[in-house]
Length: 547
RNA sequence: GCGGUCGUCGUCUAGCCUGGCAGGACGUCAGCUUCCCAAGCUGAAGAUCGCGGGUUCGAAUCCCGCCGACCGCACCA
Image (tube, rainbow, N blue to C red; front, top):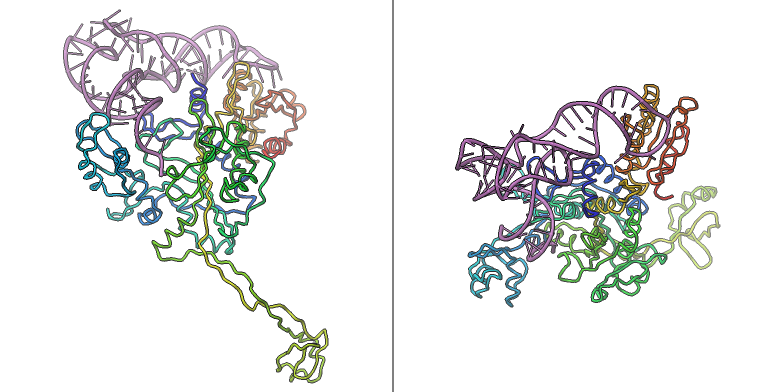
């Protein structure tokens, strides 16, 4: 069995994930996350937010999975997310119609009508690559799940192919919430749906999948990005390096300065992503950033890097995509709805001096009532009300805006987008190893941080009772506790190692004397004796991934 | 959709060619044992053999159809 097979097998047995609907024979492209898989996924989400969201004050939303037709029409998905499939009438083989025509030397534009493509194929007597047949029928295959909203068939909707559109269409409300500040980062963690023709490779290509997306809205004239770090190298298989197949190692700063990464924020996100994957246990040399060239990119992207992780059995596998979406999406929704989706920036062009009278001081003069009716004037030697010169305490000169320039523009978007299911698989893959013939998921300690096992050393009543007390205390501190009092202790430890549970707490005879328990580390098997009441802080400290 | 391989307890699998009680291992559970790493002993539960049809006295086994998985082709906007 290959390592990947062993990981998948163990993932199923230990409750991480497995193919869905198996009692009905299964349907490819759907996976169910089990109890530990659900914990793990939540922790990966938290880690991601700790790295990509919280440090920058970015915001998170939760929008519907179902989108009305108009939104995806405007975003370009209705036209770009479908393929014209040509079927050979003789042998039934299916190919993409535009590819067949291209191979035959006929160029067609995107989004051509199927009837037109069919006519072209038949007119040009394009041969079936398989049987040589020359008769074709062309039908569209839409890669999105289609549904109806309400009872009317014409009221079409789709399950979202990405969470991003739910953010773009709410731009105005979010921009308002953010007090009209750019850059503005908005994230969404949720499901995306793509009705793949033929999904393969288990968790890698799903029809329903979890994604974590960040849409960063910036002023294209003034990115306002953090300083780019120089302390780490990124392995960039950029457009020029692709010919050699060897990634160039550059720091984020170098990559930006050399023009290889077009925007500063994008370079910064690549850096964060590398660190994120490091935190999930993927070493540097098993990571790279692969640049997509023009024809390979999505319809909305001006520059795309895929973050890839090496898996022996699968090769380089994409876990995240970084796209420079420019103003494509906001512009499209603006055109489609007529609603303005601008950001504004104000810049002071000139100022003027203005006098503010200190009323309290002025009232010390007898004729203050008359003076208050006059307008203050700034003269060369001081400030006057009429022909009375004021003393210093009676007025203040302030600078006021005379003229300002208001610039309205459509923000540009830089999008890091992560596949959570793939990340979960990659994390388990790199955590999997063997020690003394046992399987262990040596997950980074920051993962599964809220899961802990409590075991009585042997199943005697007084131990079980005490262990249940410990369990209840930890539950009150927010831990998810696995309680196991069955069988020989070594076997229970082994079972927990295999599941990837970071710590096992054991109640023994000493516990009954002095209120201490042993805490066993999954990776070193070393045990420490800890006071029961110190357990929560001890465990929190040990599982803080930043330490 | 096509071609190849395959589908038997939770998992891995034997049996299929040559039709005759569906067996093992691991895991799970229970009892005994057990004060620290898959230990020992005893026992139990768990599979209408992917689904449907056909041939046959009799089908996991042979035949047909369907479903699903994996690998290639194609597809992955």
